Structure formats: structure tokens, C-alpha cells
Length: 115
Length: 110
Image 1 (cartoon, each protein chain N blue to C red):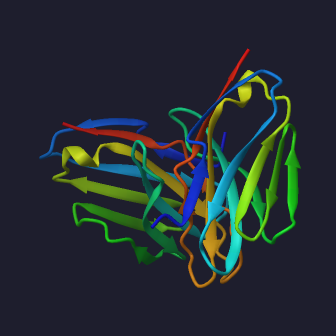
Image 2: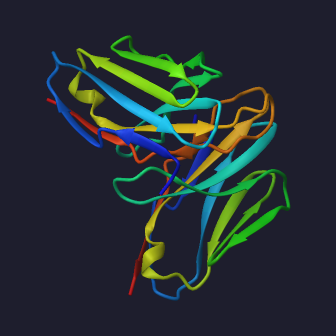
């Protein structure tokens, strides 16, 4: 069991719904990440937060909106999604050492299905 | 162009049949290469980090090695519980972004 938890584990939503994914890390890290994992594709980085500031937005559509209220919590707000957004959404955390090589630890993911 | 390529895409082994998975990369200025294991419906589980060519790390039946162009994950006498998808990722100079390969799905039959 990792120190990164995600809720919900499964989510089905219609294209007009609004929902949020939650991630919490218990590792004392100061950087958090959202990834998208689709079948037959590599993990795609979506957002990076370091010290609660967004440092990377990897050309993600505006229908995905991240929020990082503190170093332990990360949210991904979803609205007006498309069926192609169905995927496994993974949260990860690491200890940002400013130029070092930090290992990212992943949560179990939220399996999202958009109908 | 893919920066991280893993091969084979899928591998079936009999229990006890040793083999290797490959991860080749084209990034310049490698800061670190990571191996993860991912079970179905779960998040990736960290296995190893390698930093420089010639480095090796071991954990139980797994041994990871690194050259200037590729990494190998050697599996010695695998067991069915080693069945999983193995992911490789690289971190390059000047970037905080981990670049992942598509993974190798390993199945070990009893």
C-alpha cells in the first residue's frame, strides 16, 4: 500500500456533469502530479505542482482544472468531458530537491468512464 | 518520435524461465532512469532508479542495468506473482518531466 490515496476509485459521468477527483499524500512530499493513462499509450503528464504552485501544465484542455490547496492535497475538477477522456487518472508525489533526481510515488488511480 | 521505447510489448514466460525486458531511450543528458511495476487496476509501484551507465540494482528476482542508450530489467527464475506491466521512465537534464515508455506486459505461467 502506498502513501498516496485517491478517491473515488471508479467514476462514471455524463458529458454534462461536474465532478472532482481527490488525491492525498502522506509522505511529507512537496510536489504533486496528475497523469492520464490510456490504453496502449504511455503515461501522460497533465499537471505538476511544487510547493503548492503550478509549475507545469502540459497543454491540457480547460475542461480539466487542477487545485492544490496545500502540499498534501491535490484535486482535479472535471466538467464537460468527452468520451475520449475516459482513462485511468493517476496522482503522484515526490520530494522536490531543486535539480535533484526525485522518485515519484503513485496512488492507485481513479478509473473514469465518460458516457 | 518516442523518446522511450520498451520491448517487447508483451512477454509470456514459464515459471522459472529467466528473461530480460528492454528500455531504450534517446534523451540527451540523462539524470535518472526509473523502473516501475504496475498491476491491473493499480498505480505504478516504484522498483529502481539508475543514474549512470554501468550501474546495477537488484531486488529479489529483479536486476536492473543501465548503459548509455538502454536499460535492461532481468528477471531470474520468475514466479506467477511477477506477472505485471513493467514501465520504464527517464528524467533528462533541464526538465522535471518524467517521460514514460508504453510498458512491457509480462505474464508468467505456472
